[in-house]
Length: 612
Image 1: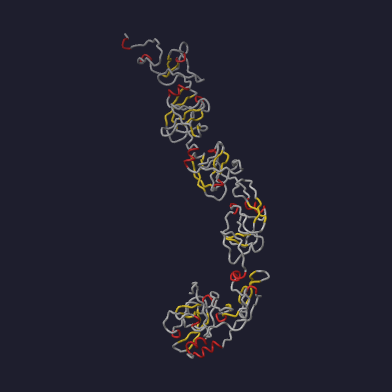
Image 2: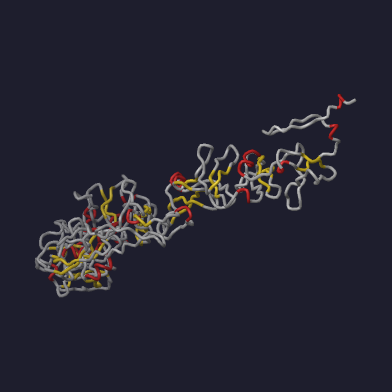
């Protein structure tokens, strides 16, 4: 390596040792890149070293000295990592290993018919060996010479220069020979580096291996890119659509072709960049958008651009600017819901610390732009689940009114409705998560929650307190008319609860088994409760029910109205309690019964023990 930490080029034709230091040998590879001074790793003299085909993908014809046969033999070399017993020509091998006559070797150097230079002979050291140069190290050439890069190492020598201080001013020279080498020259008319085919010898200094080498030497330019963006070598010109630039580049459009180039550091959104008038003396009318203007009707504005060092918020026309930067303010609110705007015509954003005003709810999307206030509805929990539109996958909760519970779903990010909550707790705090016990309608809601009832918390006159099992709360259900006029309803469910209902036909309160849910108001915990509410007929009979007429009225007996067989006439304190009661035994065989009630009626009884 030299002082710049790059490989030292060599040329096997140069003596001594190809121009390499004493502890190195000149490794001649298949190209300039692999032709360099390599360290000697074998203490044996090169002619005594074994044949080494090396490594790599190349197949290069070479010669080595076979010390057993004592002659030079041909072999195929793979291109790299061989040893010093490797010669480009048979003559070179023979000179080094078969013929020790130094005078003959010097003569071979002096008699050199491979001169690629246009003027005179290549530059040499005092020992007549050619001065080494190459694409990685052309500083070895003496003053007045330049490094001619030929087809191979033999043709890469220091040639006498044309005398011009600026080689870029030289005309194109395709040279002589049979080689077809891709090269670049600077065209003084187009002021561009241009590709050409070089024939291999007799060219001039306006001859570069790469486009970048040509640009660096001849096509000097001042980058119009901003300081935060490095100019590219080679410079890449572009058009206004920027399709020539790489994915991380953007097209800076200057006043001319030279300042319309690809710059690095492309912004993801140029519309958020601040106004930058740039540097220079140009006066170019351009358009930009104010990134601080977040209104939905913001407009692009014109400014004067100085020609260089600006940013991407810089458009040739207002149409191009608005095509890229005009804010649409697409509403993420679902159908039937409208987005709230501020006084500056910006969407009203919301957050836990900035809630929406009344009559609006906070639509929480994936980004701040989709987290806005949308108009609210009254029946939030009645709304169907709405997955929305978009490509987001957001976990949300909604109230399923059929199941009467909060259910998780995946929201697409936009177009949802108010029945959408961030957490299960949020959902349950808003929507009534319960099983509806009412046979008709729904429980009375207070603050969007079903009203529970008890002896201390009574229902309004329009509702009755549905009494469930002890483990479930009691809710106020709609009465749906007079309880005493409603039919028996055993309800649904897996319970067997002893209850009482009013039988309109008999006008009596009767016992039944209630299943726990979906009953009606004709449902009482006790017979007494039932009789307090509904107009029951008095039953004076000790056993059974009074005899009824065809119209379901109790038969009033006494006087000429007698009771049929199987009944006896109970004479009460009024006609309503003077009815035919079931009984078949002789009254004289019955024991004394004072009965029940509040009246005190004089009666007579037969004591059989006192009969004579």
